[in-house]
Image (tube, rainbow, N blue to C red):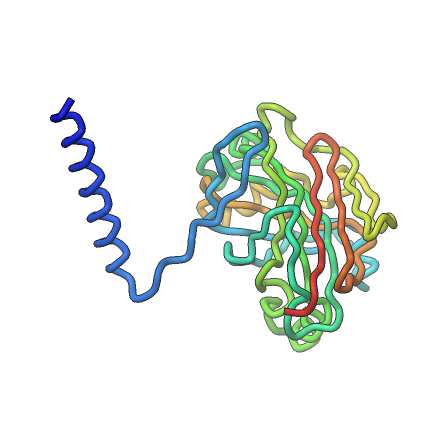
Amino acid sequence: MRRSLAGTLALRLRLQSEETRTMNAYIFPPTPQAAVPVQGSSQFYAVSRIFCVGRNYAAHAREMGFDPEREPPFYFNKTPIALTPSGATVPYPLGTRNFHHEMELVIAIGQPALRVAPQQALDCVWGYACGLDMTRRDLQAHSREKGQPWDFGKDFEHSAIIGPLASASRIGHMANGSIRLSVNGALRQNADLKDMIWSVPEIVANLSHYYHLRPGDLIYTGTPEGVGPVQPGDRIAGSIERVGEITLTIGPAG
């Protein structure tokens, strides 16, 4: 017993020493790993990259003033530090007077994908989640008018809200299903996933021709029509059939 206790103590001291050496390797402590909870499990999905599809519903493209022709999809990115769990209260963001909600289906990649065809793309999808692509619309519009990147309007703290992941092995793959969002109980977005211009396998296949997709990659697939502003005190509630629900409360300006 003494040898067992001594061995346990030695292991603990060694692990603590290794942790101290690791932390001392950085000037400042590293950012914690971004991760998403998994429905029905105590495990998490570690996130490395976030891709977002722009204008993937025809009606939303029209409400933004664009012709919804089926051109190749385009993308923008959010950094993992923007990831925020469903149920959070987030501050009204800096630098904007026009803060919008965008309800979206999120794809979680489950195995490497490189130059895959749409027919093989679903084999690379681990699961799905409800997401909110929160947007500083005035900053996005200004950047778009100037021909500049959308980073200021799209990539900021608490701009990528996400609910728990549902595995495709449990719910199947998402080709259709209701996608809805309300603000303070009033319905704003109400569409079907079948309305996406580019489907889940088409998005994964297309993106895999530009990136080595791998586990840890999330893809926000675009929002239907009905986007609009929110204010401090507003409560957002969204849902996607079979996938789950998502909520967010807007707090005072940060």
